[in-house]
Length: 178
Picture 1 (spheres, rainbow, N blue to C red):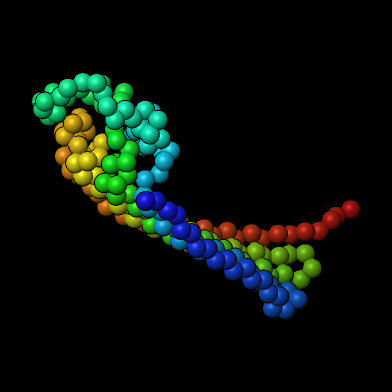
Picture 2: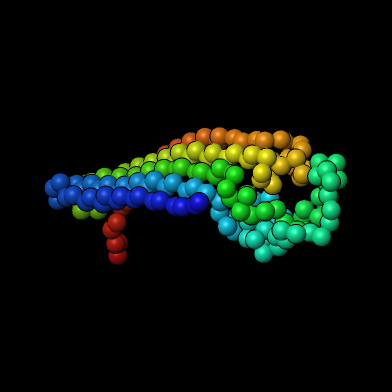
């Protein structure tokens, strides 16, 4: 019910054009696809939001007789007994797809024996898409929990994109006096 795929490529290139001029590029690109419930991800801020806590703490038989689970609900009981981890994994959607591009380039030129100019530029671009869905058989969508009562069956698709750019220009003068 869960998995992780990652694909990555890297290119590194340095070239001397002439004795005074050289250039280079270093580029990395990666794509990740993570899906399913992450067993030990802490998303709620509380220990009982962790899937492994539900596995360890789940009690399929409570010893209590409940005639109407909607009317006779006990959030403390659900918290302490855990929510059915098998039903949670089978009935929720968790998927994150992301790609990351990092590229840096430089050019270096020597003006005679003592002066050198180095110009560098960089780009970092990140894209991410996160899909979440909780039906009525999950902790976050069940009418038996406060979160489920407040939100009902719920889901979201979050898309984010970020780019950052970098430029540095350095002029060096290197001569020993004396």
